[in-house]
Image 1 (tube, helix red, strand yellow):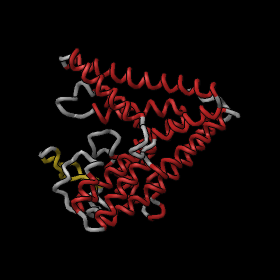
Image 2 (tube, rainbow, N blue to C red):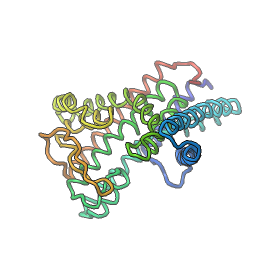
Image 3 (tube, rainbow, N blue to C red):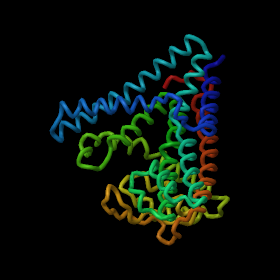
Image 4 (tube, rainbow, N blue to C red):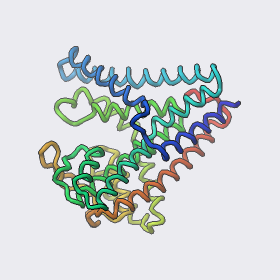
Length: 327
């Protein structure tokens, strides 16, 4: 059976599985192994390097080892699996595609928070949103929980859904894994804190570069998904005015587009580890998010998910039609 047809089938099956089952805790996941590898490399780096310059070098080496090694391993495993049997290769490729997608798991977390708010269980909703954000959630009221949930949903729509599909369309499973590794490195090491500002410097910069196009594509897809809301024009206006209101060069793009489409405001004061931080307001003329806006946000996210899948599947076909996909 032609390798291209199998890869297309793997792409489709992985997306459907992500929508249906998300990330079951009982299923072995490569990202958990990756997390253990990064933790081990960090411990080794801190034993060997102590100066700021040394830690930056160590951080670059960690990215090269983790990302480069994962890329090479995926290429090697896929080629070997397809040589053993076409079905073995297809199962492995489907699993790799599935493992880099996080849209289904993200959606389920957000749905859980929305259900708890609808039932009046504010404390359980706070616990649920704590799994999505790094801010302190114990003080949040219903509006605060709703805002934090929606901000996480749309910021992560770029790196959890659009970016993996984008890189899978460009370079198949190996390139999708490369992005996933870099994004995981950024989430673990790329903090703007004294402890990680040197060691995580390279991880953060590489992730910024790789997320540049996907974040802007996610914003465009959110505007397109906002057509049923009859508000893509408002989304465009907010995107143009507020796309830079974030410490990250990428995160505000999908947030601003979604805030405009939904007519809500994001940002403002939040507590992180007990300290108050005032974030820039995105769409200051919008209303404060309410629990009912979570379902509206989920409906927008579902539309974007379907549009993104169809778009990148088409791009995948155009770029690789009939050719063996290695990288």
